[in-house]
Image (cartoon, rainbow, N blue to C red):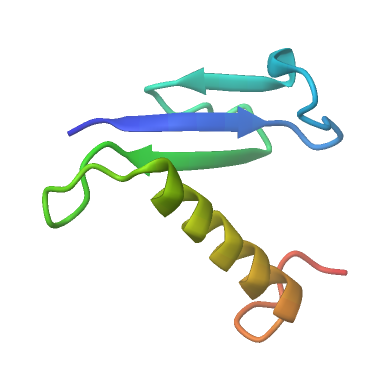
Amino acid sequence: MSNHFIAINRGKSGSKISDMTFGTSSSAASDFELRIGDVDAQGKVPTDKDVMMALEAFKMAILSRLYTTFPPL
């Protein structure tokens, strides 16, 4: 199993591919980082749909403020 990382720094829009860093090792110098494991706990490979569902869930959790108070407003 390996991990795949997508990272971006605060203030970057992501409109250019050069705004982001991609790789298989953590990018500690970035402000935000997404880690996607290439195999889940059941031994299945996550699909693009799985990743998008997870991102939408994170977005809802942050915007709702029901589960976290971070980041501050």
